[in-house]
Length: 139
Length: 139
DNA sequence: TGGTATAGTTACCAGATGGAGACTAAGCAG
DNA sequence: CTGCTTAGTCTCCATCTGGTAACTATACCA
Image 1 (tube, each protein chain N blue to C red):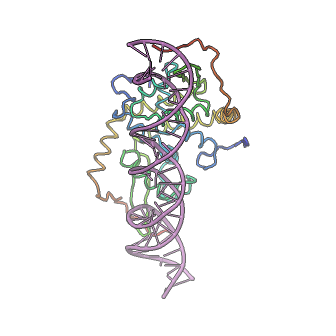
Image 2: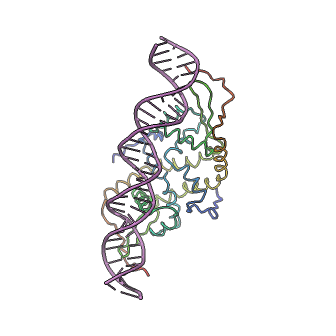
Image 3: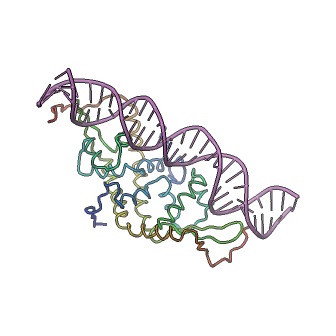
């Protein structure tokens, strides 16, 4: 992989690495997995039970991606039936705080979001136009 | 944000509201739109140009969802051709910091992630098993 | 007469996503 | 001999996603 050093990392550019890295963690399950691994190692089946609603397939997929990105460590014990333990790498642990900030935000603003949604849904089609229609034709 | 009360709302439950709120902002474009609106209002076309790679359809969709969730305000000026201005609501502005934290993380750990990826891809199929195979049959 | 501008909406369609369920290994309990 | 265990993988298939292109309104400009 050509490590092109981006002196000015413009996150608004599609090919910007920092944007690509951001997308790695901005998905459905990754934040939850990080949070679940906060307290140490966990086996696959434990994660599956802990994270309600995730399927076996998605958990595997998410963990593989996180492992590839250096966020989690995967340790396989060659026994039968298999034992596999997952834990956050030091890099993954640095994500713990940012993810927690997001979760705390979500919790703190539950009602505001819910209220905004019902308001929006009731308003439905009402225009809400600006009274300052002083703006005219462009150019 | 020293008050972390993750006790009552269990984010690991699928029906938990805080989880649903979290999913609202954990998508491809929402963080970028928030960041783009940091400095004030922006017109639709300006956002479209600023956020490289987003399509008209996705931008509309993202903005509508954000408006419904109370994150952005949409002001329509009834002129022809249309003028529509978007800006962050006070609620949306409280998301600015969490989103920035994520972006800074992404920038700060670019190389580590990239390095982890190449290492993983080269290792490919090598097992990397635990030497402590002392674990035996369960139950 | 026709082209241009903005902020969408709609229809169409290929490709991605993701769930369900079957299948596997190796050893042990019954 | 059967069934149970775990951590997946694999196939099948329905749904979702998202891009592209065409279309709209109204006023202005050449």
